[in-house]
Structures are given as C-alpha cells and as structure tokens.
Image (cartoon, rainbow, N blue to C red; front, side):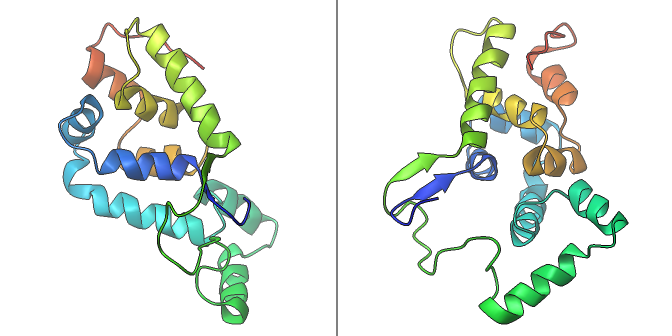
Length: 168
C-alpha cells in the first residue's frame, strides 16, 4: 500500500469481527465455541502475518519444494527487525492516515453481499462478512477452519439446517 494510509485486508475484517459483541456474527462464533478461543485466532493471524500473509498450506507447499519460509522470515527479521515481512508500521496507530480496502478485502465484501442475497436477507450484517471470509481461500478461512468455524457450520448455526444456499 501507499505510505499515506493503511490497506484493509481480510485478516483485519476478521480481527474486527472477533471484537464485536451482541451481533449475529458474534453469536455464531460463540455457538461454535470460538468465544473463549479468540486469542488463539489472533495468535494464528499474527503468525501468518509474520510469514508475509502466507497460509499454512502455502508454507507447507513451499517446504515441499525445499523452501523454508520460517527460516526466510527469521533471516529477514534478523536483518530488518521483527515484523519486517508483516509490513508493520513503526507507529502502532493502525488507522492513521487514509484507509483503503485492498482488493482481497473488497472481494470479501462483494462475496458478503452475494451471501446475503443467497440467504434472502434484507441487509448485510457481520454474519455475512464472516460467511464470506470462510468462502474465500486464504489465511482467515484457514485459521477459522482450524478453530472449527466453516461455512457449513456457520450456515447451520445462523439459518438452521434448511439454509443450503451457497454463494461463491
């Protein structure tokens, strides 16, 4: 992203959803047992950021080609400081400057609209963003799945067994 502002990524959307209370999305996460495991999700997202946003699956695939991502991260951090690959700014004011949505985050928001339409919901809520995050391959979907939160599980909790509609 540009120097002026921050780029919102799907990981940031998930982190924001984790902090919400009293919403349909937070109800669904709690129903799936994620309430008390939020910190574990945050930790997994932090580790993925240190790997420059690579999923564990991508990291494993590279390991199969003889490329040790952890070792590369360690070397880069040795030379440039911890978090160098994560693109962390020195100042921790995360929303300083203009904020723009990265292409991946825009994709998640577009998918959440399609999910809402598929479920015939009249508005887009955080539960639709959550569903969209599980549909889009990447770090958030992988971390959620590792914690027992999948598209199918969310649909069951949110809509009962009847909600089979799936929007890509």
